Length: 490
Ligand code: BG6
Image (tube, rainbow, N blue to C red; front, side, top):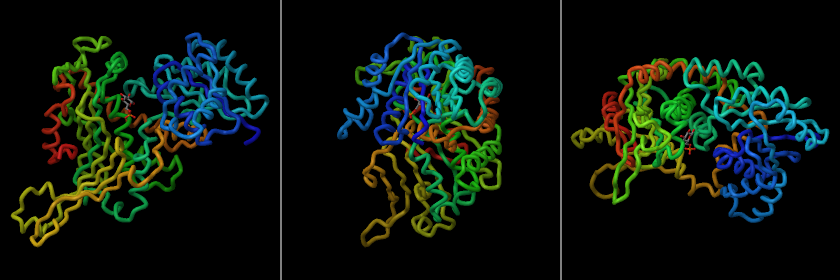
């Protein structure tokens, strides 16, 4: 290890993602001592900038959780000294050759490993990969490329992208990021299930009535309308983040914790999913609202969005996995922007206790409230809680529902790392477990492409909902149709 070096090039260094997530995550890894001894970080982008200007830009974004800690300033200085900048076009071999020269100088003849993080718009992915791989890949160690979604817009464009990337890279060099897989509670999902005897035996249609994957944001597209309008919430959140969580949730026990074993199981679940019916989907779009004298903009008030856009900013869907474990169990998804709150959670609603003695004695009222529910709160206030029925203390016999609550902030003093920290570290270490393999991607698109096509061809009108509300009422009818009540409303 002393003889090797890692060069990390952030392609698209002046973009939002680089500033908000990638550089702060790299700094956090440095602070924690997770980066190798010899490493260099290069920012690569089109705008002219000096190393000093890049450092200045990066230093402003290092407001990550660590900056409150001791000797943070010192560490930041050390880190910034390892950051450099290279101006270049994304499709210029010549500019990547010049980058290669600079990287070699830093590597000083050591075994070189190179990581490229492509934080650039999808239309220039392939050109950048071509140039990076042919002009700036390592000649002595590994070369890996992290790519961010969107990985195409549908099966066809995704397959074309994969094909183009594979002209220049092997599959094991491509690290497709889905940052939800790097979230602590998502990683913990398999631990919860496979290392606790009390859960795995219940993890099937026999005991689980439905599962819900809920994502909500309390802000709109805010300046990202141009990108968003081309994709919509189904492609932005459901086809990747929520579906990935679903696959991890529902997969069979993998042979081992090895990346290929886990991804083999995930892909099997995805391939067992029933085609999604349009009748099982509700789409919505937020509209302008005035509350307390303040006017909140609607989606089409965003200047980068066409006034007549039908792009959904909200969607709810019922999905089914046609295998022995999950036959007929509704897997509900709900994702929306400009809703009343920001949160992401998984809700597992269990079946009724058969012949429930207590419920029977109380006249069988309000059955729904007596079922158990396991809630995995991905964010914020990370935690896991289980709703159980309990006797209210006292001389009478009255039951209520209480929570067995594992709130991370109360249980663990350590702060939770950002998803990008874990994913970047994994990419450096060559751990592929949390990255998306091309067959998983194909299966995810195969599931959503026909639905998206139908929505777009039929020009389905979204149900308009006020900015800051709980979203379209249609979502409740959809749940009710499957005999389900959204857990986040109870
Ligand atoms: C991104 C989406 O993948 O995830 C954004 O493109 C969304 O639209 C974001 O805001 C949410 O991520 P997080 O980690 O803030 O929940």
